[in-house]
Length: 179
Image 1: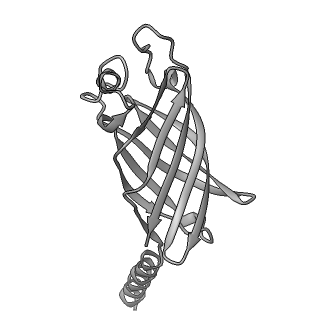
Image 2: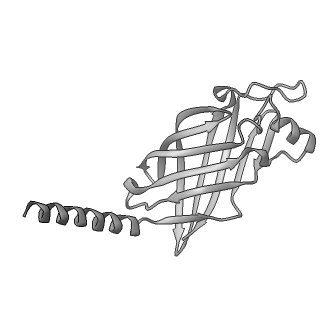
Image 3: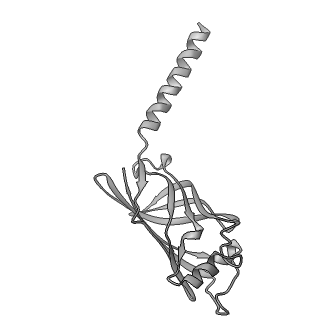
């Protein structure tokens, strides 16, 4: 009798787990995403984004952002600046090839959302909160966000060719997704 109850509990657990996994809303990141940054003395984009995006506005407990940017894809519009940005004084892409973000929790704020998670950049991981908006039409969605980041918090201390570069950089994200 006891083994029957344990078996029933195990079957119920796995059945429920399969139901939850099947009902997660996973999104594929579109190739026409945009990750841009700007500040005094520095501006550009990153051209590679990959990862896992699970998001249902009606079920934030199941949401997950686990995304990575290939730091070597930085593009400032100037090849010399790009090479400098990839070097040891800036992103040091040989030692720190990816910039990553992994969410921990989500909450609704008016018409927008706030995600708390860990940003790993230049070998430093810090907990941050990022505001974002999400819109959905049929099987297409769009995540947008704008936030500031202090590069010195992540050990990026260089200047650009003797010019002072802002400590705070504005980062803008536009990430189209599809189911």
